[in-house]
Length: 132
Image (cartoon, rainbow, N blue to C red; front, side, top):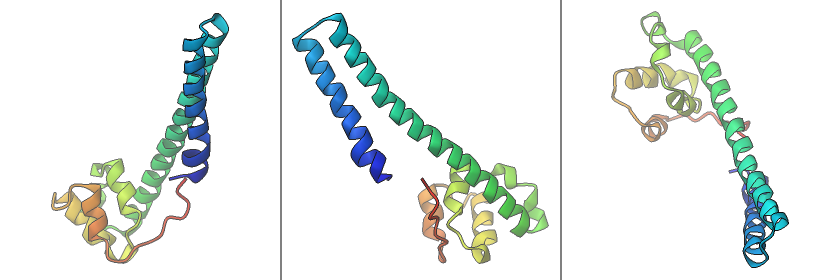
């Protein structure tokens, strides 16, 4: 949750789109229809920008976690780092270095499948204060 986006920007743009739609229905003209199209485009753009930021952040987290795994995993697991899905790596970022090898092995062995299961397995949490 990003308060500025979720509580201010998107709600205002969504309400603006509804008002523009209502105006276009009540007073149809080229101008009111165009205003609705622009309002809808702005709302869609705000969502797209938010999704792009999250995707870039996930890619950065994936890279950070791959580097951390290269540093911490034993040799026999090094070749399997590419087997982790991005969602798994994103969930693993909360895991403390001391228990990362155990968690990674459980994921690779299929004992842990979902991101929720990964997070439940973590005993010592590392905070991620930089998530947007």
